[in-house]
Image 1 (cartoon, rainbow, N blue to C red):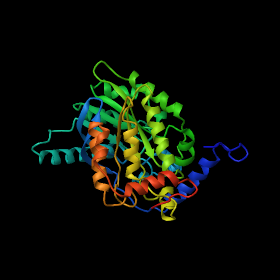
Image 2 (image 1 turned 90 degrees about the horizontal axis):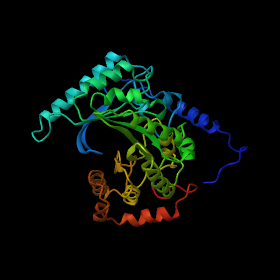
Image 3 (image 1 turned 90 degrees about the vertical axis):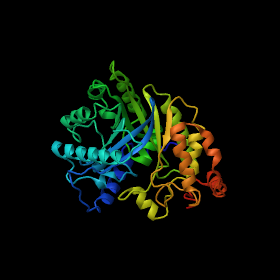
Image 4 (image 1 turned 45 degrees about the horizontal axis):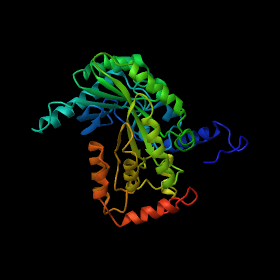
Length: 369
């Protein structure tokens, strides 16, 4: 991409413009949420450096990301699902945890082939779990104690708040610990101008160095990088190229052992939704997801993808006929890391995707909806 002149582009002005638009869009949300109920919880399987685990995924509702309340990322609507006021008491967060544990007991208890409990627990907050203005220190320690009998835990955080002493509260209990960092892209300009995230790649690298130092004799720690496939303002071929570069760059950073590529979906109360309704945004093709995963299967890291909302107009999709088959291939790749799975799916719409990849530019996208 060309770099604008200083006269045409002042560092910070674009970010403030994004924030102003995002605040206005989010002000239209009038839904309220119970501070004693988690946002979401489910059971699944996940690939980790120690193999595939049954996983319990918990999305707590602590009041939302502070950056999102300032305006925040162009594609993220999670703050719209947060409790009003921006804070939730420790006691209410513990009640949310208890509800998630009840869910796990009920679901696993009904499945004779399932383990008694998930070996992997993933804690998301739609913000930064390690930011004590969002999650109190006593809640963080309560989470560590609650899941001390598990094998592995994932917590999410912006790189600013990744601190080895906080991470060590988990590893000293014998929990292998991964910090999920929403990097979105290894390209600073795309992160700043398309995603509206304020930090640089160097800060991600610094956070990665903090996690191995937090390991103990009983447990390791590392980083799971989250990337965003096709933020707004990027054409399909640009988004694919950016993901391939970003995955390779992340895999080369010490301490980063997993890269999760998340295809963008259209969430409510976001700038992406505004563009989508005006015909200015199409979620990525599932063929693009396959292309990136196949091209980066040789990197020294686990690379996975979870296309949320696949097959819908607001989620990553192809033509509609092949979406479920392609999604199954992606799920298979996540667990086995074998790119040959993509050779087993085909559809006539692949020719349309190839046309988009050859002809679409930022000036004429979306070329095909």
